[in-house]
Amino acid sequence: MATPKIFQSAWLYFAGALLLVVLAVVSQVQVHVPQERPPGTIEDVRALEGRDDVNLLFIVIDTLRADRMDAYGYSRTTSPIMAELASSGIRFAHVESQSSWTKASMASLWQGMYPERTGIQRYFQSLTEDAQMPAEVLRDAGFRTGGVWRNGWVAANFGFNQGFDLYVRPHAQRRVGMIVGNPSARNLTGTDYDASEVAFEFLESYKSERWFLYLHYMDVHQSLYADTSPIYGTDVSDFYDSSIHWVDRNVGMMVDALRDRNLLDNTMIVIVSDHGEGFFEHGQEGHARTLFREVQEVPFIIVPPFEIEGGLVVEPHVANVDVWPTILDLLGLPPLDRADGRSLMPLIEAAASDGPPSDEARALADRSLFSQLDLSWGQVEAEADPLIAMIKDGHRAIARPKLERHRWLYDHNVDPLERQNIAEQEAERYAEFRAEMDAFLAEGKESAVETKDIELDQMRLHQLRALGYVVEPRTRKNPAPKE
Ligand SMILES: [Zn+2]
Image (cartoon, rainbow, N blue to C red; front, side, top):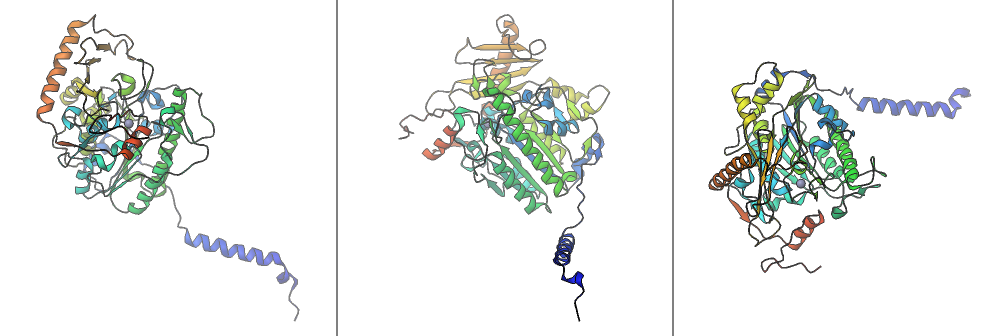
């Protein structure tokens, strides 16, 4: 019997094979509707503490000054994704970091404690068991805890891994079109996408459990962006802006990764930074040398697992020491025992209300806030040379007790960019502020956390220098490297 002509056609077999492939694919893929965050109100913020399903994605973007983000009014659209997250979340408009270099600032941020009390002010100082870290609180509350970081100052040898089930520095991969704008920091290999990739794996592994992920991005520190050409101009400040745009895209990839796993409606995202970056506003490029606003004012954005229409903006000045007291309060978890910082919930309530602020909100807004930098932080045997800054009544005062003529006072009401030093004109006010700073220093030492000094091998010192830090252990204890 002759085969009908149609069955001899190669096209028929091709079409049949294609149909089988399509059926096979469809049967494997479940119908997947990406879940957006549902609408919510201040009531839902209050109710967070009673929920037992909320995960926490804690993103630190190293060296990110707030005023370079569109969410904070910048003219360039450097960070549209974070701006959108902020617009339906809680944004703190004025946030003081506690130091202008990573290790001192991160030790404060985690413990909710000022540098005077964390005891972490020199490059060789390390946290000990005595430090109470939020990851420990979260782990004890049943969270899977993960940390992914690319800055050597938060490495395990400095004690920052306490409380983490996983604490990972991602493997550095080469990327096409990667440009590093910061000439003093060209030796860190890889990009923040390496960290994002590890974060995706973490989410995939623990999506069905309750988790806390700390993700510390580093490319803004390097002014690195993974494009073939910069988005903005080509001076060092333009490169910096381009790198913010690149890291913003990584934040977007994290949001997509949460959405793909249906985790957006049960994950709270928090975005913060450890310090800013100077571009010669006060004679310095970089950070870790001063305590002026450009290195001190950082973002703090809380993205709850729901969208608050129009978002909430907290205007009074707050500080990085408040970040963890606030997060733990929101999630209904035990507070840090010895924190200097406070839960900002009363200020969030005030931002959501049309009425007058509560007494608690007023007290928080009226607090004095402090930041510190030991100018000898990169040396072993040099005597301490502390800088201290205080934010109070819309002013910033800075003192350098070792050199009394170095004194600064700025009135943010008329001079938000800190261009006019009025310490001499307003000597009385400066003296008042200075007395309060002295009292703060005297008090802090008495209740300090135990730390230890560690020996850093040449490899670690080399890694830190590769970030552009001037760490100079040229002493008998730590001789100069032979390189
Ligand atoms: Zn840093």
